[in-house]
Amino acid sequence: MTAFSTPPTIVAGTLAAGPQPVLSAPGDLLLRPWEAADAGVFLDAYSDPEIRRWHTRRPSSAEQVDEWFEQYRRDWAQELGGHWAVTRAGGAVLGRIALRGFDFSDGVAVCAYWVLPAARGAGVASRALTAVSDWALGQAGFHRLELDHSTGNQASCRVATGSGFWLEGTKRSAAVHADGRHDMHLHARVRGD
Image (cartoon, rainbow, N blue to C red):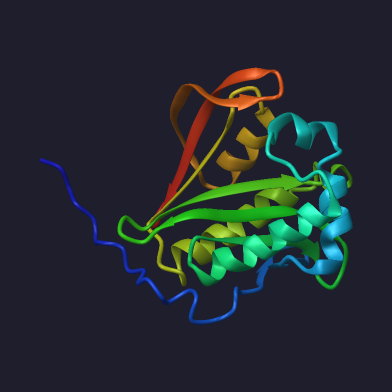
């Protein structure tokens, strides 16, 4: 017999009723909405070989970054997603964390992230992912969060598992990267994990 859990508690209209939250993470990290002043660092991030390797969709100009930031604001207002700059409290941008594909009927969202080279190896991605996940599975009311990454991206796999996302399987030939099609690991964290 299959056990059924409690239906999602998230209600459409709840998130957009207020501003996108600013979230704190251990180690003096702050997750805040992107600001116009961040455009330069955001654009520069996509010139990093590792970010380019794993992210085929990337901005090509400051104007395009402005368009992306505007889309991020619309995503929140339309309850499609939330996009945060990961910063030191009151300081420089260290990375990006996002929740996308809000599905209120099933209580599911998808996580994505990257970290600038200077901040790698210090647990920034893991702490940011844990903070946004705790908020999403708690206060926001989601039931399940998913993320996927290339099976070749071992750093992302460590971030996911270290943040409580169970490895659920491999999606064969599921995404295109700069060097061709990749198998993708699927990870998930469920409320109560």
